[in-house]
Image (cartoon, rainbow, N blue to C red):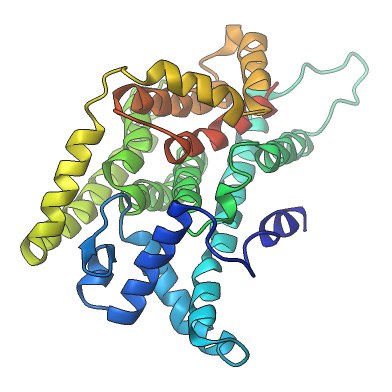
Length: 342
């Protein structure tokens, strides 16, 4: 109920309040009204829009087909389409919390994270302790200052956060159920690419490559990560090749956009750190405190895996020419989980 109240107020019964909100709606409505090439890749009218991938419009298209006729019973056709296009934010927010809560829960109930036993007993059960820290991560995400407005916009940002949350959960899930973690990793890795292209997939991809050397993963778990990377790569390449053949002008614009985006090499990194000091409030002070408290146990999964995700996201900010809230938002989930460990 806290999550629903947080999201519903500000999502409906309003006009688009920012450019990103308007362009996200425009790509969805273009795909719904025109179909064809606008369903394969984002367009605004006849102009290619390459700042996000097609996953936003694919999911919104399904919601439009199902819900816009229902809303059309008491709304104008355009209002019904806009309302239906905003409904997926409820799904994205649930996925963000699902991945963060269960990821934190599975990490917190591991033996490395448990508090020392009390002399006469009475310490919390590992599952109860895990649930308590998972609730802390949930509340940290809801309290995060930077995503307050972005979670109510019809943009790719909530979707990208959801994909990163699934990827994080996948890396944790492979500890206990490698096959289940394999599917979550595909959803997170491929979904991040289809949500925001190379910028979106960079952090979970770097995290996956770093975690392939992690000593807490045995051979079976590393194979699950490697196979998930391979399947995700095949899916992404298949879409790119189809775009290159069917819509070469969109592909050319997409390549130019990504080449320009990854040309920063630290030029705006200090500005990004300055912005993150307010964007990630109140998460980052608790995350730093957790690192200090667990400094002798940095390689433990409950500290190392969130830290790897944070490092991968900071590395992305270093390479980008410009960065702002879309790129900062994916830091929220790992930072909230690390903050809960404090």
